[in-house]
Length: 101
Picture 1: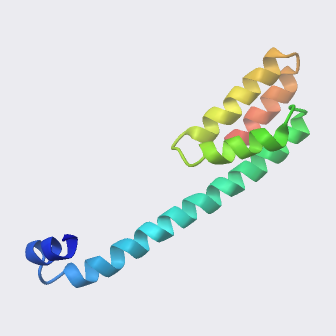
Picture 2: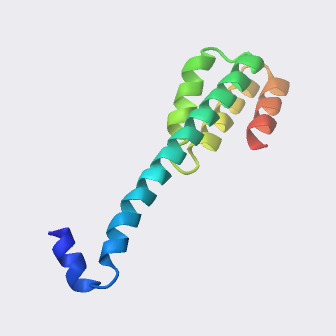
C-alpha cells in the first residue's frame, strides 16, 4: 500500500525514493549503534581508571544510553557526581573532563 500511495503522490520520484530511504535508515541505525558501542567502551575504560565499581556494567549502560540523544553525557555526569560524593572529587572531576572531551 505504501508503494501505491507513493507512486500516486510522487510518480516521477518514487522509484528512487523507495531505494534511497531504506538504505539511509539502515546506515543511520548502523552508525548510531557502532558509535554507541565505542562510547560505552571508551567510558567503560574511563570508569575503570577512575575506580568506579562495576565499570563493565556501567560502560554497557552508557553504551545503551548513547543511543538516546544526551544519554551518554547524562550517564558519565551521574557517575562523576557519584565519585565526587563518595569521597573521590578529583576522580569525579577527571572523569567528567574525560567524558566532556
